[in-house]
Amino acid sequence: MQPSEYDVVVLGSGGAGLVTALTAASRGRSVAVFEKSMLLGGTTAISGGGIWIPNNHVMQASGFEDQEPDGLTYLVRLTLGEIGVDLLHDFLKTGPEMLRFLERHSDLRFFSVNRPDYHPGWPGARTGRSVEPLPFEPTMDEKLFQMLRYSHLRQPVTSIEARKGLAPEIIADRRQRRVRAQGAGLVAGLVQACAKLGVHFYVNEAATGLSFSGDRCDGVVTVSGSTSARLGVVLATGGFEWNPSLVSAYLPGFSSAPTTPPGNEGDGLRLALQAGAAVANMTEAWWTAAYQIPGDVLDGKALTRNMVRELALPGSIMVNRKGQRFVNEASSYNDLGMAFNAFDPGSFSYPNRPAWLIFDDAFKRRYPVASIPPQQSAPDWMISAGSIAELAEKLRMSVEGLSATIDRFNGYALQGHDPDLGRGDDVHGLYYGDPGHLPNPCLGTIGVGPVYAVEILPGNNGTKGGLKTTSRGEVIRPNGSLIAGLFACGNVAASIFGKGYPGHGGSLGPILTAAYKVGVEIGANPTP
Image (cartoon, rainbow, N blue to C red; front, side):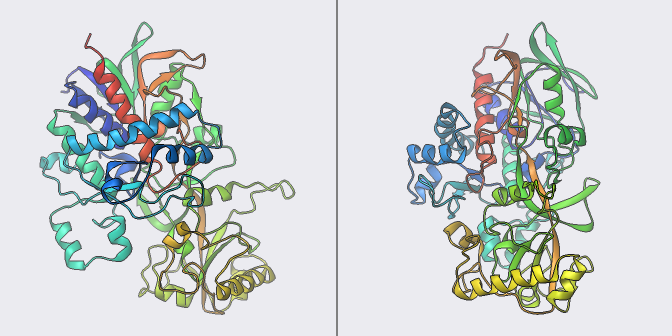
């Protein structure tokens, strides 16, 4: 039977909930984390685990130069002037502090990823702002270890190791030692640190309500009963991308396939709305190109996977139903994903839905495509044809349109420059390309046959609109007043980046920083 009272109650066990719990517990507060599913870690656990923080100590130690004013210049451009400069300032000041806190209060250690911001040509852009946890070997209690969520699609390697390749015997040794990396490593390190400070974890505990004493939120109701929170309740329940009614209400026409765990149904959002909370940025998500393999499931729902590098490697293109390219395939997945939402008033439709990755046999034999390794034969769900014309007919698109697009692109590939969409024109695009391919690592010709197509879905890595909060994470009503005792962080709260995505880890960076601020705020309050 669980205790009925804590200083702090956190709903949700992704990165946001765990950082808040760790921060509050490090200040001597009693903390309980309630998780709706049977596993801890949420979306963070299946993510790449990157954390975008300008001017942080890890990048500085690696020799990357940065200054806070450069970060502000970049973020003002990224957010289109729609986000208050004071919020951006606060993130830039607090983010490095949060990262140092994690290294002081956990066994996690981070390295700086040698990759550029997603808009490297903009003023203030830098390389090295993204950090990632080093592979983490848990030493926690076995029962707690079995509660950790991790991605079955990711090996226990860092993003850099995955890109360069790692000896099979090293990977096998890490698996034997149950090493976790990327997002799973981040979650494992945070859970272990929380447990050492006495944080209590409860799984399979969906929240059904909030309790109030007057106007102050003082506890939660879960499927097992009521729990009081002397200092505050923290909503860290993730986005609402798996809730059809909320998606229909806030993202009309922008339907997309979530790549996240199916438990992200907007539970915290609904609870706060019932309490009179305000919302912001509700028409945005962390967009991406995605695909599905028939029969693959996650927690009983169709599994959707991100597609990134295949789109930028030389010898592939992405086309819409007219057989036309419509976006720089090597742009960041968030920016690329927004192209699926373009609406054509002439045809009164979304012309870039459906979309297809087109490539030839040479490409397939050289690179992994949609999780299929080069040595494996094309599965039945991967559409194949002996010629471009036959492929167009199978896809029910114009033969002339697709043929003209490929002829045009092949000419660009030979020249090494894409004047239409700029693929491979900046260091971000080149990061995803094949450095051994010249003259442009992102541009390669597509042969006459055999050729293949994989359907590309508009996807999302979670919604980024949610509850409106102060810089300290306090939930706000529409009139600007606070809902006392109620805090929010993570994808349940509105992102401070608006439409934008600054670089690798651009979602976790502000999320973990906000979560740290919430823990500091609650931890500083005297116990009633």
